[in-house]
Length: 123
Figure 1 (tube, rainbow, N blue to C red):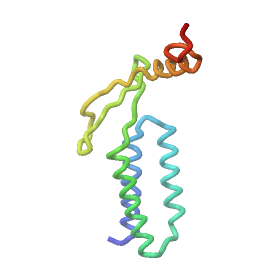
Figure 2: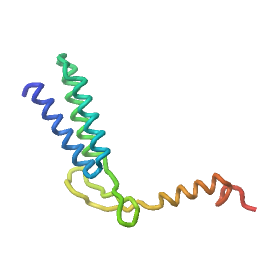
Figure 3: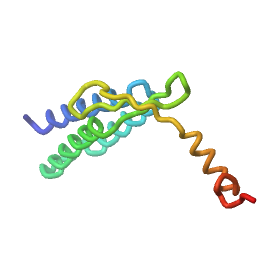
Figure 4: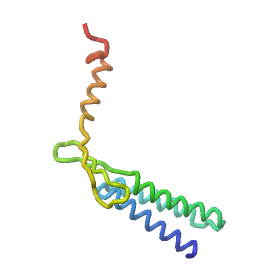
């Protein structure tokens, strides 16, 4: 396959990974798509075979990283973020984990900073 075809296929794969991982998050979708397009435009005139091969490898690495290492939590009805973990080789969620206590941890840090709740300010 010619380098141009490989690059275009890689670009489509990267956009697919972005669409899958950031579905429902308009801000992240817009920013990631724009960053990918800018990177491709920046290297559009590259003719050095070694540089093109390196760029193709970067495309594959970025796509693989997104698909294997990025998970996005969603705000649930209880006002807490919920993370649905997926196995690297599966297409859907395998386990749900509710992430809670973020607000509680922040409040505790605030109390410590003000000297309360084990911050050393007890009498």
